[in-house]
Length: 109
Image (cartoon, rainbow, N blue to C red; front, side):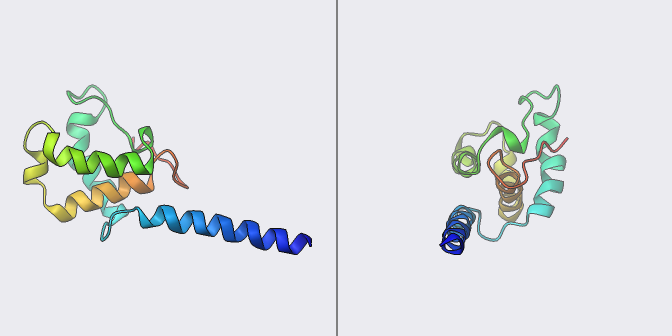
């Protein structure tokens, strides 16, 4: 009976992980996204930046996905228009993978 409970628990954890992974951005590269985030976003969103300081763990995975859908239309300036779509996918993937509710939250300091 004890083994049955363990199998059920492992199955539930795996199902939760697979479900949250399905929300991630298709085709994004988290490692490249981290580099691009530091290069592209931290100029305005770093300490003392005009856009306010932002790090991956200030939002949940779902919040980062929603942010990127909205930000493409509402972000001040033209950074979203000038940045290649693949780079935006990579940044979104990094933020998603490093979000507050991810397995490895980051600050990207």
